[in-house]
Image (cartoon, rainbow, N blue to C red; front, side, top):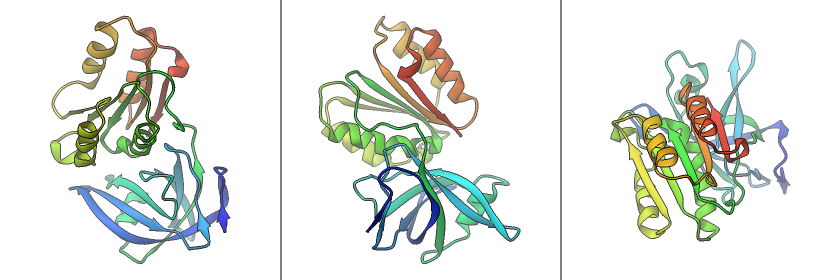
Length: 235
């Protein structure tokens, strides 16, 4: 049985779209089924590079894996339709049964096990995709340290996996889910983790689109958190 053992495979996989789920008005999850002879071993937070046909060749577009490493035969990628975005437009044009080629897994924005500290996950819009399996892994590992998810989106309809996160918060007393649809994410993080106390032992995992990611990274590092304790991925 072919398996990557966590190392990236440059020879493309070829998967079949088994299911498509509309997550929000402009956001879909694509569930990719690998052949029975193949598995993709990955660490929560990693991504695949989809090969998008273009001008007789392939363009490469990265998409984070939103599913669990424990279910490697069916991969989920979650993305929104980006205006003038060639990759998302192509994937949105595909239906169930279509083939998708990709390489991977790639990326160092990962969480294999929860460090011995409170972990704070900060996501904006579809930036929650790599954080979802990170959080699942941390919750499955047990432990006593708190877990928090601050998730900002333009509307309640764009809070992806809301039912899942709310259920996890009810089931796991150490996990707090804090969606944000009206307000400033930097202001929330400043109040909660810079002004409230002097604790600087927390670990942060930040993912989103554009300037918000380095803004939050620099805010936390200037506030006294160690560089290695503030991990991030900017799209």
